[in-house]
Structure formats: structure tokens, C-alpha cells
Length: 414
Image (cartoon, rainbow, N blue to C red):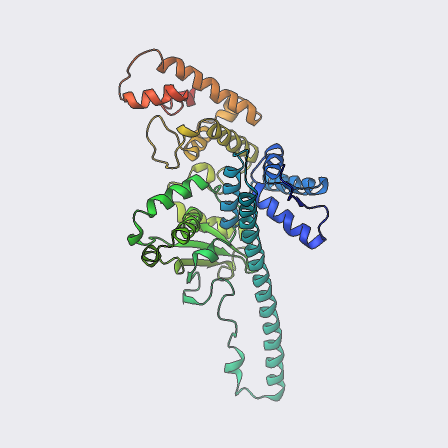
């Protein structure tokens, strides 16, 4: 038994609040049981009050149908912790590394939140001073300095730095990957999938000279809060790449890929006063960006409106199925038979109307339905030695792992 445990209950209120935020960032996507197991495996002791708070946060998110308010850096840290927890004999050094990583990611996001609040206060102070100066000049009937009065002194963004260009409806910045990893994901975004980011990082290591095509899209509320609308997996990839290059200490690779200057476009809601809701503004931009990209229909804002429970059941069952058959799931949405992609599976279940058609009320019922269909397909694909348009390699792998839902889509409509 490892001796160095982290006690939340004995911490000061401020320290405890920070620790709870870190624990939340590590476990926000897990069930109560899995959350407890993960925290125990990392020797993180949360008192009853802390567990109630973490559960309340998760319940609130599920009620809203939103993803946890955490940054890419926190999502990467949570994925690393979850992977490490599978090892029953974690060393104290590894536990400390996981905690430190989560602590740094959460602290960085909270630091950004403070910078945004400070900037907002500075803007308010400037507006008050501007109004006072205008009133003074009006009283003195001296307009000789009015040009200076209208100059805005706050030009550089406290997190993103100076804008390269400001088009009104959007600004363009050059931002470091480290900075981007501290920005939260938009609450209606797709779930961050670490396996996809890892595969992207492995591929990019083979083509560093191509640089980083594309741009990261960020939404800015009227209060100045930032969230990543598009590019979360690319930011995850860059976070992983940064660590890989640092560990290797390869200066040549570091020169090939400059992770200190990433092209970012920021869409401020302040330019669109006709929008009364920050969520609608962000949703419309997100939808516009992804019209030409393979986003699952289930993930498009507004599509699953009023079907939050159905979406939750599909998400949970699909994730559990992926955990049960990890060899048969691939990060790519263009994976080949007999594999499936978890987002494609979610979309297919939603599109086929399986939840409503079969009166499925919870995750367990959907998992049973999927496993029953899998068994039926298994009987079919075990009945003969070969099938048209199915390679021997694909058939062998499906039989080896006992997973057949990726062989064809006929099961969706039974």
C-alpha cells in the first residue's frame, strides 16, 4: 500500500476547491463507480462531500447535454490517467507524474479564467473613464482632444496575444500549442477522444515537414470567455507532439514543426449584436464550419434537441462496447470491415431510430440489444468458410474477437 496519499478533507477551502477541480477534470466523463476506482488507483482520497459535489457536477452536465468544462490539456491528462489506472501496480513516481500533469493543466485553465476576468474589469474601468472624460470635455466645450478619448488602450488579448488581423466578425492570432491546450472545449462539442489524437500524433511524426494545415476555431463570448469550436483533436495531437519532441530532445524535429505559432481564428459574439444567446451564436458557427466535414449527425447542435436521454444512452453504450472490444474499434471514420468507429456507430444507432423503435430505456438495455444482434451476426458469419466481398483476413479477425457488428449494417434495421 502506497503511503503518500492526498487527503482532500484536511485541505484548506481554497486548496480543496482546486483539488476538486483537478479530480473533476480527471473523472468528469466516468460513472460514479469508475470515478471512485480511478481516484483510488491514484491514491486520491475524496471525502463524502467531495464525491457529492463531483456527482452533482456530472448530473448537471448530463442534464444540459453538455461536455465537461475542461481544456484539451485536462482531457489529455484524464485520458493518460485512465490508461495508467489499468495497471494494478502503479509506481508512486507514475502517480505523481499523472497528478502533476492534471494539476498543471487545471491551474493553467483557471489562470486563463482570471486573465479574462481581469481584462473585463479593465474594459469596464476604461469605459467609465472614457465617459467621465467625454463629460468633462463637453462641459469645457473643448473637443481638441476627442480623438485621443476614443482610442482603446487594451489591444493585445491577455491569452491569445496581438491579433494579426481583425476583420470584425473574426480575429486571426498566432498562438502557442501550450496556450491552446489550456482553453476549454465548447460545451456542445463532440467528446474528446484521446485514441484519435494519439493516432494523429503518430501520423504527424512521420510528416513534420508538412507543418500544420488548417486553422483552430475559437468562440469568444461577450464576457470574453474562450472555447474551442473546431480543432480539439488537432490541439490534443499538438499537446502529445510537444511532449514527444521534448522527451526525444530532437532539435531538428523541433525546428521542422513550430508549435509556438499556431494559426487561430476567433469569432467574437460582440460583433453579432442580433444574437441574444451565446449558445446560438457558437452553434451557428460550429454548424457552418462542419458542414463540409464528417461530423456525426448526432453531434450537430439542434439535431438531437429534446432527445438528450437518447443521446446519453447511445454515448454510454457505444463507449462501453468499445471498451469491451478495443481491437475492433478504430479512430478513423473510414475504417474497413470488420472494424467500426465509435462516432459512426453512435450516428448509425441514432439514425436507425433503434432507441425509439425498440423502446430502449437505458444503457444496459441498448448494450443487450447490440450484443444480441452481434450474436446473430456471429451465427451467420461462423456458418460458412467464405462470404462474397468479405476478405478472409476480415472474417478471421471478427471470429477471433467475437465481434461482427462491423461486417455489415443489416442488424440496424431488424
